[in-house]
Length: 433
Ligand SMILES: NC(=O)c1ccc[n+]([C@@H]2O[C@H](COP(=O)([O-])OP(=O)(O)OC[C@H]3O[C@@H](n4cnc5c(N)ncnc54)[C@H](OP(=O)(O)O)[C@@H]3O)[C@@H](O)[C@H]2O)c1
Image (tube, rainbow, N blue to C red):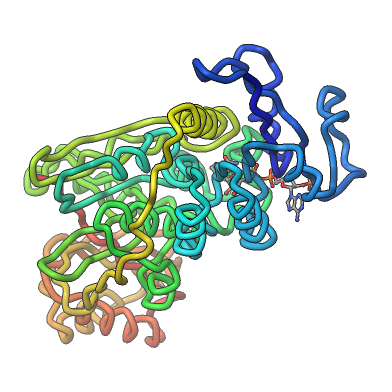
């Protein structure tokens, strides 16, 4: 029996899914059905497309809807992607999406409508597709205590490359290789990681994590402020730098954040973090469950093939469910919101990096501010310029203290004439035990 699949979008992922489904190899991804593409929705009919795709193209969503049993949304953005998915679900079509922004922000509407319409919606490619994270968490019966992830492959590629090159050089290389889009802001700023983290945390804890709350409360930092010299300082003391997305249960509240962290590598005090050796375009997640303990999953993150693979996996699952007359109801987004812990009272350890003019008393002045806010310093590392008076970065490692005190110190340093630009804080995330 044939099932007709409509694809919304013919970009990186849409074209990957189209090519796979029309190549023959993937036509029988289910024991019960043969799969054929009905239509492919695009916005700009002037754009050059492959000859194979031409007969399928349309700019009419209604045409796709009428001719499809399953709709795969690969357009991105909130609307009209959200409206189209809702409409397809209302019409009883199975829906598959890779759209993290829609799932994280509007999951409730979509999943409730899917239950009402008795149809399947799957979104494995929206968060950690290559790791099958969504399925693992959806089907887990364990009490998940903590999830730590490297979930944005573009940022991880850039951080890996910055050990040898400047940011602009690495990002240009990433664009050339197809690992970064022309507009890479959402990857580099942590926004993409935050949407994925909101999805993962909602599934892990069965309480809704609204990404807007993470953005508004300053819980999302990207890698824009990381400089190449930070890696040298990190290495001196047994660390690497990774953009981590973290969700952790503390009694009744949840600590949820995205930030660049110092992760230990063979460090006497902090061990070796389980994500420290995840490099390049790889993503990885550590899930810590009460019964299962710590489990690690790793796989390729960015790009056409791994995302296409995750979408096809979801398609297979929808077909399997259709054959059994079954739907997987998703209720996590109908639960109450997760109570996010007060970040300022959390105790942190790490380092602050400043950039200042290399002249007498500068370091004395900076350590004075840090000491005044109660930061007890351990190691201090200075990267001196070639000429006297050059701007030099300094790293000040401190003992555990409240994040509030760190923020006060950062504000004072930023306001001072000695420090150039924004001082940067890196939290140390020790090996998980
Ligand atoms: N790229 C990845 O590695 C990756 C990984 C995981 C998840 N995702 C997710 O997958 C989705 C697709 O990403 P992508 O990288 O493939 O995007 P993309 O290359 O920008 O392609 C988007 C496609 O959607 C079409 N489109 C956009 N708005 C439309 C509208 N209003 N009406 C009709 N068509 C419209 C575009 O049409 P035109 O061609 O006519 O402009 C284009 O074909 C996004 O949700 C993204 O977050 C992507």
